[in-house]
Length: 79
Image 1 (cartoon, helix red, strand yellow):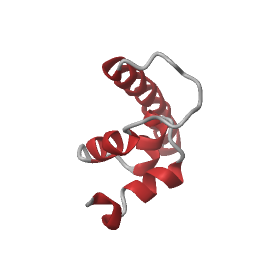
Image 2 (image 1 turned 60 degrees about the horizontal axis):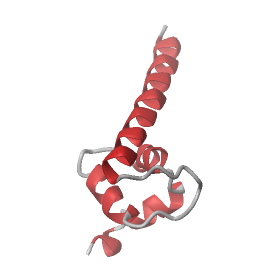
Image 3 (image 1 turned 180 degrees about the horizontal axis):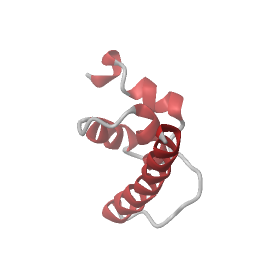
Image 4 (image 1 turned 30 degrees about the vertical axis):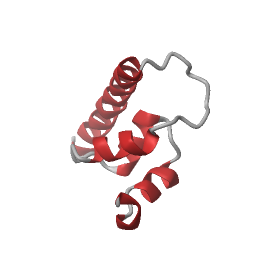
């Protein structure tokens, strides 16, 4: 039962990440879905981390590579 619940939670998390990603793009006025470096991603990453999201979820929402998100969230880069 616990494994089934865990899988269900993961699916819900994926769906919520997609919804958040689309809403964020609407708010930023970004209608280009091509994979390119987005200006201001660092600010968005820091903003989302303020809500307690982990780096994996933030990377999923912003479309940025996980390693880049982790780098942006390191204490030296927060200054």
